[in-house]
Length: 264
Length: 304
Image (cartoon, rainbow over all chains, first blue to last red; front, side, top):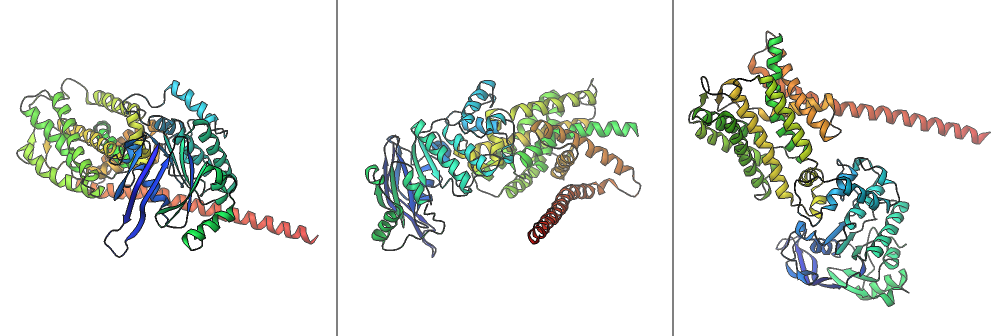
């Protein structure tokens, strides 16, 4: 489904600030794979996400979706296949537009946008049904401006908007990190049920070790632009946080340094 | 007094199209586009020259619309593809248009006296009310379509709309083009109304447009697109009424109007934000007092 081969990316090449974000990163994901990604600061997790979604172009290597090379396509062209939820709850929705208008924008993913109305009666019924899935009453507030919602509500809406059109690939970039524990738990359980129900091929970056182990069927660990550990389903089931930290120290020869790390 | 009031409302409606154009870039796209000063004259020039050469005035006005759109496309391309700062790309186009407009006009001003006129055989008030309302409603509807939604989202959260597959370069160019098309149409209509086109008639237009948008929003609010576009049209009329009243003050000259416009904008921008600040402070003070009071209560409760 998703194949990343030998992807490398340098920031500020040729200057004193040159920084290696990714070196020869390789990743292959089967359909319906749910991979969690952990790693130290500056390991290249966000760069990996940005390269898959097309926000950044790699210096070398290629990205394939469903066996077709998408390396040359821009972000908006790739969005046909890729749904994405950002860390910032404000990033995934348009605040001055209503819930229904935001849903209409998400609904047009992969379609050409023309002069037909964004929110028709037929679409509104679909939006309501989908919003009910969140269980936070947004289906009754279709005409409320999204800017009036709380961070947790906005992130739940972002998650729904990124997924309800069933994209091939879902990218979650620490999407619970900016929320309080109760909200984060709500978003996490929503993520779990949506991904399972829609069988989405998902890549999730997280700082929460416990979450990384609990969610998904595979776990990868990154350091200095490389994928240093790939834990398959069988081993992941019995993994503990201590083992994971120990493993990191053994491979990279240092402690996992992450200023936002949550052990769970 | 009454004739000057009718005159003010008429010009308010004529300039309302320009103000709606400014509203699209300034409020919807969040792109302060200064092309307006040039494209207003471009519209007037195209409309006037075509009329002088015998084209039906209404066709000339439609061509002005297209000419404005073209100017907007250039600004949009400079900003999105050329990666030039938004303000600067507008200024560049404004300067370029100054020369282009002179070329179109052929001389600094062109008179339309004794020519066919857009407002022949019809009341300016009636036709302009119809045009202004029609444009307002068409814009309202447009902003509800899929393209309109992605255009609004481009100004609201560009990163988000890209992740849903809209090409924000295209939506920006489209929005700036639509904006300048309306501005140029307004210019063409104003030229027909005052029966001449002048190469300097667009100077300061962006500030007048902004003033109309801001006055309208301050008085009528902008909660929905419907309300916002209505506010812009009414704001344009109110601006013209203020203008007419200011001209009646003896020691003010017509040339002082640009300064007055600037002052109106400063007031309209500063007053609401200071008022908000004061309100926040007083609420904070009240809340702190409440919290302190409840703490004291809890303490005295503890000693009992």
